[in-house]
Each structure stands twice: as C-alpha cells, then as structure tokens.
Image (cartoon, rainbow, N blue to C red; front, side):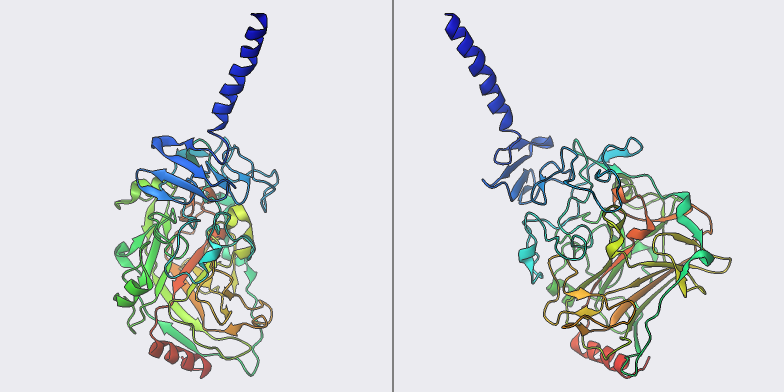
Length: 450
C-alpha cells in the first residue's frame, strides 16, 4: 500500500505538469482573450491566429506568440540589446511611467502569412520576417511586433514628446549638398495635389506595409493624389480612381499627421487615436510641395508604374536611426535642419517637414519584402547611386505648417510606443503616373527644365 501511494504521488504531478505545458509549448494550442487560439506547426515557425474573424497566419498583436525565429515577446525578453537601448529591454516593457491601453485590433506589421497581390517579392514576408536589409527591414518594423511586445494583452503608450525635443532652428546643423557634375540632371517636375483640407482623405491604414489591415499604422495618415487609397487598395483600384492632382497624376502620397496637443479631436476615429496615444486636433498643412528631382551625377530613368517607395522609419525611436531620413526645418532656414528635434521657428516662419525618398532603383522590382531593398538612397556625400542601380526621379515632399513656437505645443502622430519622437517621421509613395506623364517628368528633369 505504501508503494502505491508513493507511485501516485509521482504520477499525478507529472500529469498536471504535462497538461499545463500544452498551453505553453509552440506545438500546442494556447487560449487567448475572447476565445482565440494560437497554434503552430511542429517546427514552431508559422503560427495561426484564430478568432471570431477567421484564421490568419500571424501572432496576435500583443506579442503572445513567437517572434523572429525564437525571440520571446510574452516573457519580456528581446533576445539581445536593441539599438540605442542600454538595458536590453524592449520598448514599452516594464516601464512604470508608461500607460497601459487595450491592444488595437492589429499591430500594423506585415502579416507573415499574408500575400500582397501587388508584392513581387512576397516570399520574404514569412513567419520570421526578412530582417537582412537595412536595419531590420520594412518601414514599420519589417515583420516585427509593432507594439513592443506589450504584456498581458496590452500595448504600452510611451509618454511624449519631451520639452528638450523642441529646439530653436538656428541651432540646427547645415544640410549637406552633394556637388553636381556636368552630367547632372537638374530639372524639377512638380505635381500639385492639394493639402487634404478638412481631412477629406485620411485613415490609420498603411497599404504598403500592412495591406488589408485596418488601423495597420496606429496613427492617422494624410493623403493627397489618388482618391482610392486605403488598406484594401490594389493596383487595379488605384489605376481606376480619380485624383486631387491637377496634372492627372494618380499617384498616392501620404504621411502621418501633426496635431496641436491642446486641441480636440472631433473625428469619428478619436477613440482609436486616443487608444494609440495620439491626441489633439489635426493640423492641415498650409502648403504641400511634391517635387521630383534629378541626380547630381547622372540622368534619370523612369520609375515603373505601381512602384512602392518609403522613406524614414516609424520605429526609429525604438529600433535606432539607421533608416531615419526626415528633416525638420523652418521656411527661410531650409539650409539647416534637425533629424531628431522639432524646430521652433522665428515669427513669420513656418515649420517644414522635408521628406526625401530613395532614388536608386534595382532595375527589376517595384517592391521588396522589406519595402527598401528595391529602392535605396544615393551616397549622401557624392549623390552617386550604388553600382548596378539606376537613378530615378527623387520625390521630395515638403509639408509646411503654421504652428506655435512653443515647446510641447505640437507633435507628430506615432506608434504608441514611439512617444511622438520626431525621428520617426516618414512618408509613403505609390507611383501611379501613366507612362506618358512619367516620360514628361523624366524629360523635364533630364532637360534641366522646371
């Protein structure tokens, strides 16, 4: 009898331990809030997220599953030190100063199992993301959990901005300008597409980085140009849509909005914006200038229709500034700019955001898995494109705002965990010019005309 009791004492805890483990190991099915489940293949690579909305092959936005080939998100480990972070913590984890909010419907990262009908290199968007290109891939994380691995089904809103992020423009450094050669293409082609007055076309989607995902950006974008643009746009719907551009340019141009922090958001998206940490009244740009420039070393060739191009990095505050390319300046002071500060402008001068886009094409692809590899920047000192790349017209967005020259008065919409850091500024472009208009643009740029 004594032996039987000892055997039962060993067997019962072992059975309970095994039952508990079924909810934790990658090969099991773990219960999620709302009755959702996460399952994985035997290798634990591609997870399926099942909820009342069906099945998609990606982990939930709160980091409850495996990320990037073994990084633990639910447990608060990042598998290594993130750039610019001294203690190895993931953004938004374990900081008592941060405010927990319910996790939005989707993180905005490219869905590992999702296929973009317009994506030529879709094989890079798999369970572990493609992080080989330029500091971890896509503009908004390249397959990484967008909300910093928030714990317990919550994402974290990082407080911000900070007062020390607002600096007099006269303290900014000069903007370097590559020297032009005799072979330079110095013309300028401009599309006049309006300012999106009255927020007539805005949403928190990002059709390039998170196609098919509503609120995939977790911040509001202003749009000009193509009237169709949303998370569900395709090449076909964009080609069939109207445009706000006066020259018939059907291209899609968009950027995150700027808000007056003390203002009120009266839109129907106010609750979602507040949950994402973006509050205040949206400011319409006073001016929007969309220019296509040449190359200081060579002629340019046409950008293929439906090419996707991104600039800047919406995750630059947490990932590091390697892909941060936005410039913050003031009208009349365009020869100097900040990359990581909001400018305080003298009276009569407007705050300007200058978004230069990469312009060295691989000659084959209209997109890439991380939305960067097919189109890169020229050398910042010489303006030369890397070997094997073709120079194409460089888009420059200049967005001007009438804003108070006062610290903390305004801020950029950002992901919840980015704290309204100006270094996260970014822009997106889908070229939908027809071939005739693109030829006209190239001819003007190479012919040194405006």
